[in-house]
Image (cartoon, rainbow, N blue to C red):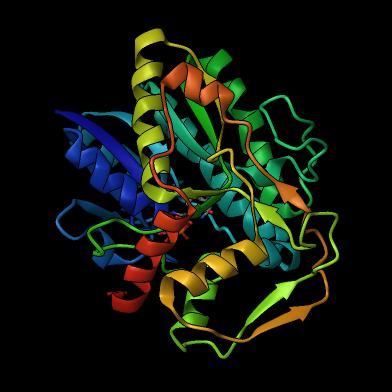
Length: 324
Ligand SMILES: NC(=O)c1ccc[n+]([C@@H]2O[C@H](COP(=O)([O-])OP(=O)(O)OC[C@H]3O[C@@H](n4cnc5c(N)ncnc54)[C@H](O)[C@@H]3O)[C@@H](O)[C@H]2O)c1
């Protein structure tokens, strides 16, 4: 049995990956402090309660289980909070990760898969963003992840750690079972916010800016289903084990959808018309963020299996019957 430590495994993307790991024959061990995650999301899986950078706890976990790789999802993820409290983000996202990496080196754990983000790039200079796009993160959240990416190469040269960095674009959707899905507090992501307007949990949805240089004036984003993300982690781990090479991948569907298009699609799928309020632009929102996923499709044979409408359908099923 191959044991994988999944930090942040009780969170949104982590919990979907935990399930897929188990379905793929791995034994996931979850490490989460439940600051943002949900115990119910990992029912039936071993859960270690604590911080991802707690070296004493990590030593106990690495001694107890023959862990071969760490998938590191644990982080704070709210961009606007990071602007107000940057230290919180550098501490939890960068410093804690450094402690985790040190502990992996001390305990000779060879493989690391890291949840990075399109936010490391900042403004997009091209229609799609490939791995070589200039990196100018616009906020402390993006910088905390960017800094962690830099630390990783140091750990490879000093300790021989092999790593894969996956830079996600906009994760969305829920597991087809309807048993787990997205549940952030506060929720800041577009699709759950729109769906909450559709089911009356919010009075309306705000669209921040309709005067961008896009076809309909609203921002364009690349939505990728959470199970497509989860599958990429397993493919990345297997490839890394096979050829012992560290890599960076941009991970999105490769398709851009505007905020207005997403709202239209949600109205069609749910059959609900809800008020849409056009508000001023928010500072730091790039007009367009779409992945060039050529590298991951070629090297890992990964392809997205869910399109926007399937993403919304699964998220809608979850939103109506959510358990947490
Ligand atoms: N959701 C997205 O669209 C998106 C996009 C790009 C990158 N990411 C990255 O993916 C990862 C997962 O995001 P998510 O949306 O699932 O977030 P989430 O908040 O749902 O999950 C994060 C989990 O980590 C836990 N956690 C946080 N700090 C911890 C710590 N120090 N020790 C132990 N546990 C800790 C939380 O309790 C939570 O369960 C994050 O690293 C995030 O930066 C997410």
